[in-house]
Amino acid sequence: MTNIKPLGDRVVVQPKPADDKTDSGLYIPDSAKEKPQRGTVKSVGPGRVEDGSKIDMTVEEGQEVLYGKYAGTEVTLNGEEYLIMRESDIFGIIEE
Image 1 (cartoon, rainbow, N blue to C red):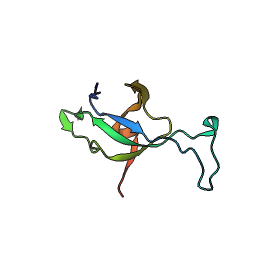
Image 2: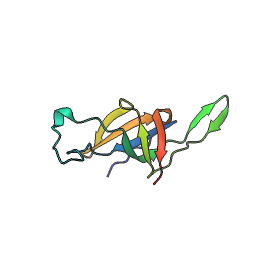
Image 3: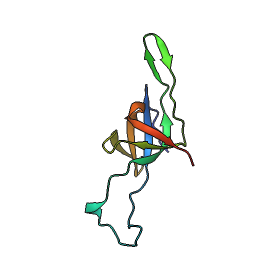
Image 4: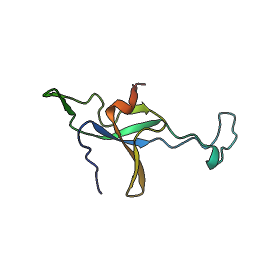
């Protein structure tokens, strides 16, 4: 299995699949599905250096996060879809 190790303040996120049907039971066609804005962090870079000091990452592997609709770059690895984005593209961590 191949892993992605992001550099700097980048994060690898696996998006949650889009819903196939509504709460009332209607099926949603592929052309009308919304792009997911929620996913699981799979890998985290080491952080960034700003003004000579290292700034650590605030997200960790395994956390579920919310991100912008058009955030990141889509990549496919071993048949799985991933997004590579900067930590600043992540709006928040979902805690349940």
